Each structure stands twice: as C-alpha cells, then as structure tokens.
Length: 314
Ligand code: CP
Image 1 (tube, protein in one colour):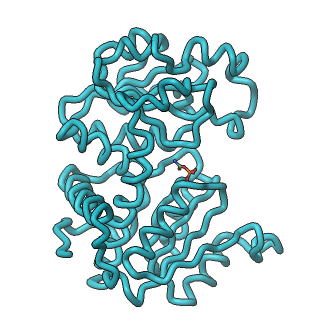
Image 2: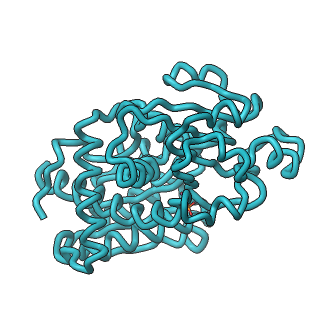
Image 3: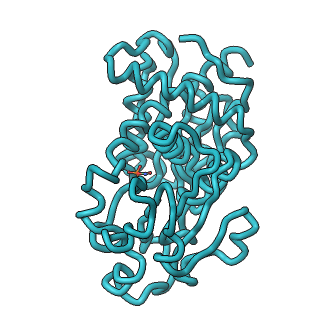
C-alpha cells in the first residue's frame, strides 16, 4: 500500500502540535485499512522484519489488543511485555527497561504509563519509534484518531460539526487529545460536566464549557461520554455514582436534546449506569461504540505503517 502521509515526526506522542494535513492523511490511510480489514486483504508483509513491543504499565483491553492485532496484521513480530511479571518489580526503572528493549533492536515501542510525559521521556532515550498509548492525564492520541475516523465515516468530515465531550474531563487524556484534534480540524467542541470535573481555564483550548447537560447537548452532532476515573481521584469529587448519573449520565431523555441523528460515543471501558445508560450505549440508532473499537485497529495499523516507514527513511 502506498503511503500518502506527509512527513511526520519519528514518534506519535501527542495530537497537540499536529497539523490538519497530517491528521487528515493519517485518517485517510486508516480508512483504507478499515476497508482492507473488512475484506480480509491486509498487506501482511508491510511490517515484515519489524519488531513491535507493547509496554503497558497501566491496564488496557482495547488499546493493547488492537496494537497487537494491528502489528500482526501487517506482519510485524509483536511482543507484549508483562510488566507485572517483569524486572520492573525488582526495581528496574522505566528508562533502564526501555534501554533494555532498545538494545534488542525493537522498531516500535507502544507505551502506556500513569505518568504524564513518560512516553516523551522514553522517546529521547531510545532509537525505536515511540507511540503514546495513554500517559497519565496528558494525551491518548490514537484514541482521538479513531474517534475522529468514526465520526468522519458517519458525517463525511469534521469541519463545522458540534461535538460534546461529557463527564470527567479533568482526568481524561482522551478528552485532551480529542479537543486538540477536533478543534484543529474545524469542529466546535463543548465540554460538559460538574465544575469539580472540568479543568479551570480549559476554555483556553478553544472549547465552550457547560455544566448543564440539556444546554450543552442542544443541537450536537456527536456526544462523547467519558469514564468517571475514580482511580485518579484524590478525593471525592462527585457525591455518589447515583447522583452523578442523575445529572450527568447520558440517558434517552438527555440525548433527546442532541440532533435526532446524533452519534453516541464512549472510549471504553464503560461504567454502565454511572456515565451512560445501557439503553443508550446499546441503541443501534445512535451508538457507534463498537465501531470505535473496530476503527481502533485500522488507526493503529496506519500509525504503525507511517512510523515504520519514517524510521526506515530517517
Ligand atoms: N479506550 C481505551 O484506552 O481503552 P483501554 O483502557 O481498554 O485500552
């Protein structure tokens, strides 16, 4: 498959700073991989001889599995590091771990870490292309790319759309990456949530802030719900899950304020009955949550392809 993506960085660490043509070209390539995946005709020799290591210091189902699948579909050798069974448990540092993997001539290093900036730190120390698979509350770039691809498939583009990002924005790397991507591509972005879960000065990122779901959802083209990240909360920022759902959980009544054909999205994992009602999450007239997962594989194939070629030419 010919790569039509303009020159990019050697790593994918963040959406912030990416330019519209880079994003559009990555989405175009991902779209072609989505079609090839459906037809079962993926180019299995594209990454032959390349080694991809998944290094996840935080739990993951979708991201880790889809990077593994993406690498294997393109013919790479894929290794999933079991961090819980690695020498990290004997005190080995992040940098020493990465240097060890680097010495094995790995080409692509996919990193998830609880510390914001950890993948960027590694990128300065290793020769492999580093892909940020989610770092603390900073960014989750491939999630934003797969979300954008999903929206684009249903709406034909991103420019001029109004997209609501709802819930625990404060702790969400998904929200940050989506805000950067969607505003860069010309969408209007609203963030909706309780004052305790909306970062102060987030309006500086070019978004509108709402604390009322009905007002914020009015006329929106897509509604992205966020997981309530209780594990990152130092103290109780919400009174109770029940109370949270009443005011900020997406149910059919609140969704009725959005456009009649609004897309319902969630990066997963979902807390059903906390940030989203099952009736909405599973409603085929609105929900594209399963399609987001499918697009995740296509987007990660595109990212691996582009970075592997950049490494080969660099
Ligand atoms: N959306 C997302 O990052 O899911 P995982 O934590 O399962 O990878």
